[in-house]
Image (cartoon, rainbow, N blue to C red):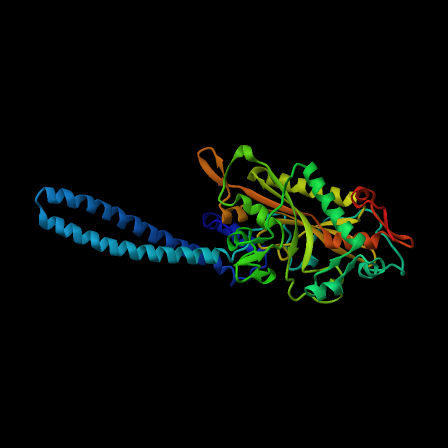
Length: 425
């Protein structure tokens, strides 16, 4: 959530940023509406403070007037105190209503994009930040997509998932399940070696946690909600892991805070149909290792580059062709200031598959969760970042397709200590 002080002080920058997110002229009125609501809130706060101050002064005066034998004046002061009490009670209600209206409207404003974010409407307008420098692998007409390979080698079963739960919930079996576990271990070990503390968080969060990281009220339609307990299944480990530091005040010496967590992720993915979502391309439950950083504002973009390098290192070790995209304003997440996506090449489908998003949220999440650090005598908002390192479903799909041979699916050498086998046949 943007700070209202930032909106007031940097109105032109906010409007320019919203235009980069494709806000129309009518939509941009929200900036003036926010400032007007804040003016109203400030005015009410001033009235309330003045009323409380006068009430306090008059209350103290009553005793002095009684001691001085000025009963009539004391009675008049007491009547004035009662009037001020009624007025201040009413002002408190109006102030609470005004503050709630301001907060509700602030929740509707996305983060302001970093100056390097390109203009654009959809994924087609994203910049290729780093392209794959070599020819992409060609497997020929006999190459099979991963869902056919899964049947051939009994690696996962989507139909069984439908029986047990519903569409989009794969059941991994045999060496398919072992491959999943191997990738999780490989990714977690790599994160630990890079200095990330491993966290095993809950798979459900409350409304406050989902709101703090920006999933609510923006993405409620994409989250699974447990009505009776008022809890949400997590769409990513980012939500519970980042919220560890909700309502915390850090010291500068605490930076950087680096955390990693493996969790299943649950996403409704409503409206996702067609050939492009076959197999593991888009599922409702998938495994992912997430890296999360909490950084000093002066160093967060250096940290972002470090996270990109970490994900690149993983893909290089998996021997997968990849490219990095810098997302345009129209394709960025609601809470992000700058996002890079990693895509791997699917040789059988002959298309790129997104496997990671790495983002800097600057103060957008920390303002919601009141995550601050001591800077001298003042408290400042920290910066939060997160990235997939990596999402397994599409990594598994790409590994299966790109490494298929007549003798079976070859396991990259970096994974073999984790799988215990070098080939699926």
